[in-house]
Length: 348
View 1 (cartoon, one colour):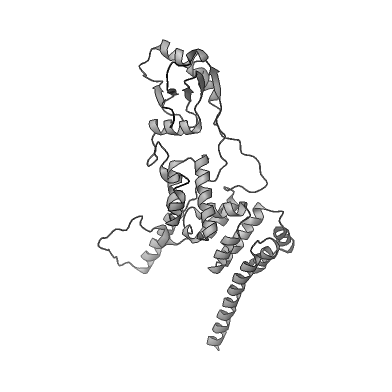
View 2 (spheres, rainbow, N blue to C red; view 1 turned 90 degrees about the vertical axis):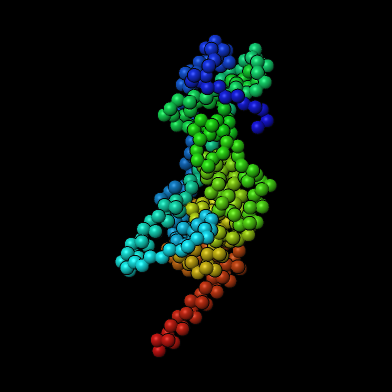
């Protein structure tokens, strides 16, 4: 950081009460804490016409289209070269193990939350120009009492120019990590999240790793959390490598983002090419939920359309890649027709 920040403990700090009072100004710590205890620094959620990410119906759709590939969910993070072990089990026991594995997989596929970006903190308590030059570095006063939530913990900064203010989010995250460290989270933001480093990781198809690291390093409403997620989604949409996130906890967030941005066509092409027609239908239903005034949503509601008719209505009314979608859908229908003919021939 540009300016060194000195942490001042408010419990057993070793400072005299007169020195601490001088640094803090006339306002006592309890007065400041009372004024900000009910302020989390986050915007109140606005009531929107579109369903939110945590809406039960949205969550149900996203979980269905995410898929459940057990081999991908439980793949080892690193390859271990060792002796393989095999067990002989009964068919009943095998089914029990499969059910157990599916339940564990569902836990691993729990999606990170999607929330609005937190509101910047610009709370100033006092300006004391008589303290200008008292110290060349910022002084950070932190309440390290036990039992407080991180959002309720009072962190106050005295700037070198004498301004006494609430710590901004960047400062709060670093100081909180000092006093209440979270596993694998670093005090300084790792270089891998810099804009210059992301394209390198994308070229190596490490999108999932970047998203996992972002979930560890940042809070869900942090600007960097949202920025990194959007950058990953944008790259996957441009390169059509959606399958990298299929059967991971991040696929649902990508689908929600693309539906919200009215850009589901690329993902829809990928889904139909894999013959996942029910997933294609679900994705369009999600699109209609988020954009109920679009032409295909109105026509679908009026005619109670389902299945292929719903998909064709979206392609004709709202798609920006009509030709490409018509081609892949026609390929699917031809494949289905050939399969039906082969079955009828074999039966006769």
